[in-house]
Length: 198
Image (cartoon, rainbow, N blue to C red; front, side):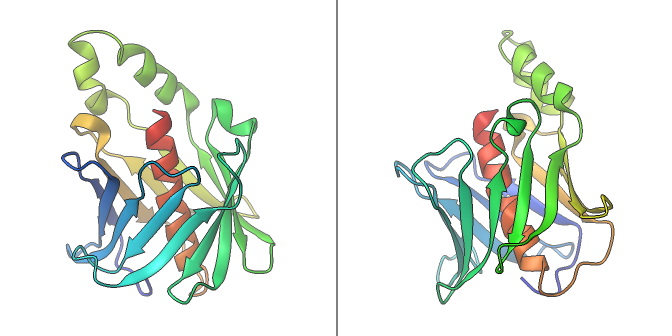
């Protein structure tokens, strides 16, 4: 996923049994097809380079059994670990909070939910008949990727849509070439986890 043309669009496929989505760049070109394997005791994510699922580009796997604060190993097509994304356990109950870690086990970036109240209101109003059907248009959380100086590098936002199936990824500051894969894979894992949590 080098030289990505931003903004990217993550579009979930509502009609499939798998938890999957397609990532497209600003030109509408598919840059990844992301599929979560169902009914696994450990998280297992496969990232293909196209929607035909002919070429596995990356995989993401939990390093612990359904652990509340598990880290997820990001691997390239050769199975080499290029980094990790770790959910910050108790800190993520109220607001999503993740760390992006490089291949040397050093923290590089943080992913933080901008406003936790959006998720709370979405969950409450989602239980109300009829009104709950429209919460995908009313409440749209934003997640910021920040560097160690707390500067926002990338922003991911849920877009108004039924079933919360559209997400937009915007680049706010340049990313080092070695980091773009780690950031994008981490956002893909994060959006799968957060969408499942509601």
